[in-house]
Image (cartoon, rainbow, N blue to C red):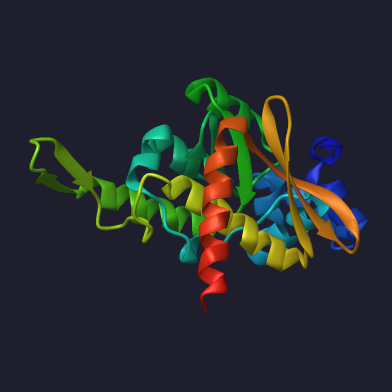
Length: 241
């Protein structure tokens, strides 16, 4: 994704959301207060959090997610420690095979993504969310994990579940989350088709928007069959409505 190498300020100027004078003022504010450029732009009131997230999504081709209507399984929190999540404003969402999908507010900070990939040994996929939504999700889910409900199953194993869990039940919860996310993004961008294309090491997922196929996501190749199964379940449910 070549545009990831661009500076945030240039992206916003290219999008017509900042002019050169505003960028200069934001850069000066950033240096004086020792903060990231994005936070300086928000502090000066040039853009709202939601506007900034939507612009980055459009310019970089990265999906967005409203964390306030998305539920995270407790076990996913094990991939990222709370102090790292809080410091870097990231939230784990779901894992598929050897890939971990996270919500992040600053997609330009490639160092965080690289650190997570090294720490987890997984490929990191990113979804954009506002910083305030990420902070609220961290407060809600990591706090809930500390007060998880521990029950003993009939076979003697411990069932460790939080009161904040996915509404979907079963071992394919991550696949359910991925499919829901893809459908939500497809609706948002006005896609007429979703293409699942198996490749040697992964599955490329592309949306057809205004007649043009655009790549939006990749998942591990071993996730293809669970994805197909989930889509068949949804198709069968739709036919019975």
